[in-house]
Image (cartoon, rainbow, N blue to C red; front, side):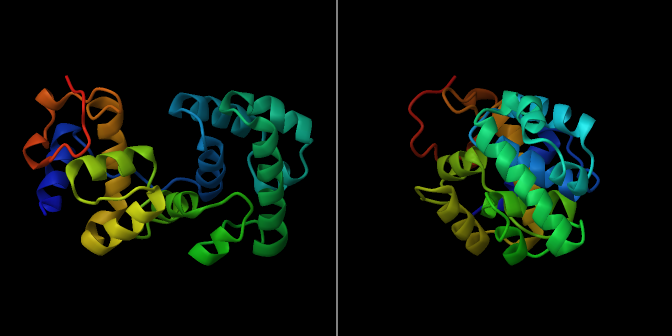
Length: 207
């Protein structure tokens, strides 16, 4: 497997450098908002929410209707508002207003699955993990790195096959690639910087 060369080629193509660690609470809540919606909707909802509420305590004490209004763009806003308020309360009461750094503690929060927990570990705490969203799941299968049906299984297989030194960077690189070249419906295979490594498993239409 050419994962080292794939990572190097993607970094070169996108002139990519690892960013600074992000605020753990914002990463957590933004990832909850990203569930079952588009990236643009997540950004809009997150921006609106954090322009008004900055801390777990503020959100724990916030009016649920106000939260719903601010995050409406993310879709399923009533469910998400309830989860966000409950997550905030638990963080305040159980974790001293600090987002936990351990996978098991993150998974104990309502509505937090492995993808969300892994995002917190990678983007907030820079701990080696592999958040698997639709881009990572799709591209990993198209490349032939894994042969999996679900994001959960993709994470397991990627952790087995990919050296740990690449874990932190993998999500951001594949998401960037999935948004710009390796599009879900018609990937731009002709200009892809990693096309020579790609088996195009399951790809039926490309530009």
